[in-house]
Length: 412
Image (cartoon, rainbow, N blue to C red):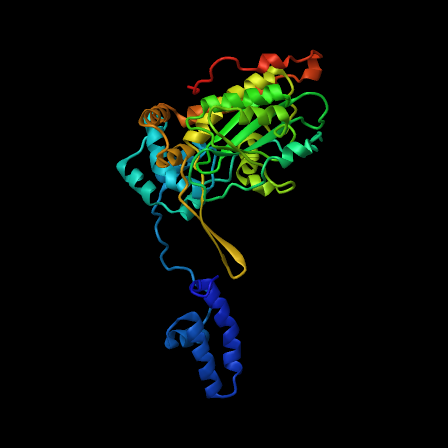
């Protein structure tokens, strides 16, 4: 609590409870007067109020008449439906997006909403949303992390790429943090599926692609697939120091482009340099497919179908909070966040898209039912877990069958 922040009722009662003992133990009126002055100054109460409290019972009493509920069961049902459709985000992310998400679900016939309910959704607070919501229903498998397989690194290649950290206040879309998620299960032996993930720092826009292995061939294919689907250009690629990113072939691929691109890397052993994509490694990947081993062509194709649905679900509907202000105060970092918005809204507010692209993306979101998307995602996850691993059928997997030679289009 800062010096200017007023005491809460409970804090004031605790303080007066301690001071009351000193007050009654004082030997003279002058000492009692000094103590009253101190209590009055600290609590910001009138002197008579302080005397009345320390002479009476400091325990808080129940209200004689309880206040009625402003938000009844009808509002709670709508809030729970919206929270379910967005896979139970936190109240801070959910509250600023209740009205337009309710309209979206009403448009697709998922809920019925009166004018009164809509007005209450516009005035409900974050703390009330937190009270109305049940505990999160996400139940992702959480097996222990297997040790990431070691690989050779090109020291000279890394030294040629500058180390930096994309500023948190970056406002221009296109600066991407990049990471690779391993789906090796308990053992890192053999060839298995990886998820290539890119997260835009300014908008929170996320792109995921599944690849079988991590050779230059599949890494280039993954980056090309992401770039063709992105509605805005890539300005910077910021991976960690893994050799799957920093090798001669991939560095040449990024530098020999028609459009100029900045290539940077994070500091070794500083995972927080890629803090946004590291956060998404769980919320966008592990929370859905867990830590099971995926190592077949069929796994790769189904996982890419899942990521097509998640591309719509996360970028068009899932609210994202971004840091708005950060300063040091009394030895601690004070952070303030702006209202939570989906990445698409942040992208539209950046004014970087041409009007035609803006209209296409808005029309696409207008046509989507978030509850249907959520059901499709769950069905695809069940299909992925039902597939056998490569060791089960004993056949070698052909990486070329996972490549995507056709033009990538926005998933419908």
